[in-house]
Length: 330
Image (cartoon, rainbow, N blue to C red):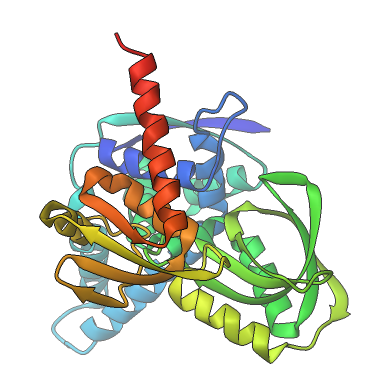
């Protein structure tokens, strides 16, 4: 059975939910964002946690109010409810709910909606309850939100890591391939955007990293493995520095203009760690591709002094960009 619910939320809330749906790759066949599929997973995987959080907070407030004999139990419940439903809400989402979204639910997501309707709407509307749930979800760091949306995958990976079990899986970017790995660590990217599984391949013993949200058809085998201390040390270092890539670091020197220095402070996403700075000259030990991808956003405000392979790669990139604009004049 399928049911449709019209929910009214603030425009900014919808925009942030759309951003998560896009980042976590909930896409339709035509390439557009599948917000409904994402919200169904959010409801299924966050409802119990949200309800428990709210219940624990309510119990704490009631316990504190119970220390005052002048407040009756009934008044305490009223005050506690007011604190939770009014004062504990984010100011960001107190604006009028001007945007309508249609939730089409079935199966487990329909069970969640019916549980809310049948048990939790004594003083508020369904739209208000869903708004509060979404607001609570968005108050959480994004890498933790990813753990909510892909709860089953994270639980399976953590169990395999704890039990030192070999796992197999495919990925959304390579659905026809099956990877067999020894899982060691789950680490969040530097900007807390995504989580990555750091592991070693069972066949070639090479180190790899996979974005957790892209792991599909996860299977934990009965086969155990023994930690390789050298691999573990390398993966721990990768987890601290840049868990999205197991590529070897290169030594690089980059000269920045004054505006480039300003950009370096402002552009924090995937920003490499600085080994040393001498004026506007920066020294790095970082994966080559990650360095180049980061500084491509700087244009002429960043110049690779070394190594030569980075200089040539950046010259080729900007040269092709110039050719494109030259060939396609309006």
